[in-house]
Length: 452
Image (cartoon, rainbow, N blue to C red; front, side, top):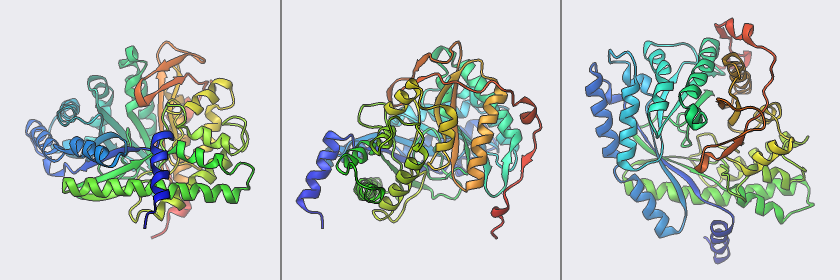
């Protein structure tokens, strides 16, 4: 039974601590839209998305109005387009991206994810065409997001794909140079990608998912920080317990919204993603949570341990509030989307190497990092390989969303706007990885992957 004190507490979280539902994401299977004619296939894609998601935005706004819970984004994820388009005889899939973009605009969502390919063990014809199409698709569309999975614990790392993605990211940055490489902010390279992640830019509707499903992502860094302000000086047992209790309350709200949205849309409820998703707004930062634990600045020694505690406590608290938890579920540490991370980079306490160490214990990876425009494709590929190795060895999801900004160097700043925020351009090692990346092939799976 919920008592009056808990209701008031939740209202205060919403009004003063930036608590919100970050996204309601409708996952839609497009497997029945495969067709030998690309034109007919795309017509099916457009019709199905606009039919199933017709009321998604309205339902989100109605729930927000009736319950007083801010719901920031309404989004769509679809079956990886490499699978859908592969039956056609087309030589590029840019028209598919345009159709997704039109459908997203028609139903009013701000992003649609699924211009994706899964190539951790190797390529199909459709995978190759899709990946080659990514730079042009992201340059030509506004709301389409793209992702490529290049590694998994089970099969290892596809180093040919890793090498290619370095070149694809560079090309995407060049084509969107007039927007500070914005196309790269909509492109993620994954290891162990989840099929039900509701967050962009990596959301897609996995092949093991149902016909149509509602997944919800919660937020809440500000709420966690505020709760820790009340236990200053207490030991880490108290800190962990405080975060668990807070995560439970946050997730319970996400569960309520997910169930209600599913009921009103007549669509199956999927999962609640427990991630703490920051924004550039003051008071909504994961970095500030780590600093509240006692670090002078995020990135200082102890940051990895603090993030590990935070990530684990969020999962332990959240799992009690929902029977269906999925997606990424943990703490995001994007640079441009977190005011505390931005400040930490500016004051010199946080660099890419420390971020990489922190990704060993968080839910995603190197996220929304701007680097000098002359960073080579091989260096970007090597950064992807490092993150993929962390994911592969530790049986967890990792990802890279990196933006080489044409014409800009270390210390410059780029502005993406909105939730994508702003980012200081960060220093990258100038030692070459070219010969390493050019080897190609596949890094074998680790011994602990043999679990059949």
